[in-house]
Image (cartoon, rainbow, N blue to C red; front, side):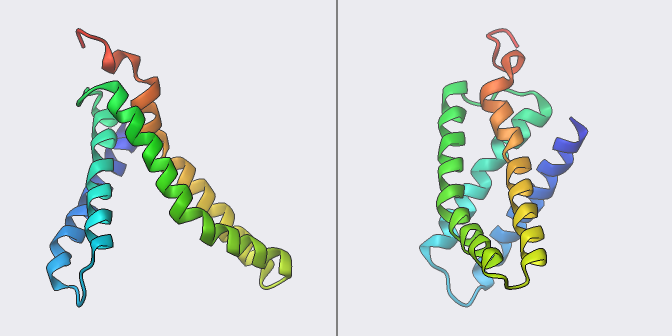
Length: 129
């Protein structure tokens, strides 16, 4: 669980820095607030999973996980798809392929704690835990 605690604190610091830097941006729009909200919301399952603490209820975090996956597919899949098309067109194909595969691996790894927290942490969600 130590690696997930480190990952939680890494994201907590990034979210805090994002929050602190918000007033100093040249333009602030709704997407900044939505990104900050999603970033802060995703910290909860990282914290709950790494410390084995039940926060809220299991069904809530299952819904949040599904929304997170949908958002990542909506926002992250088009750039990966366009890069994949460039790979097959022959433009710097080896380097592009490496970064596309790396992005997919990182994306899957970052979804492990919320998935396990929502679907696989039976001891955490036990009534007397």
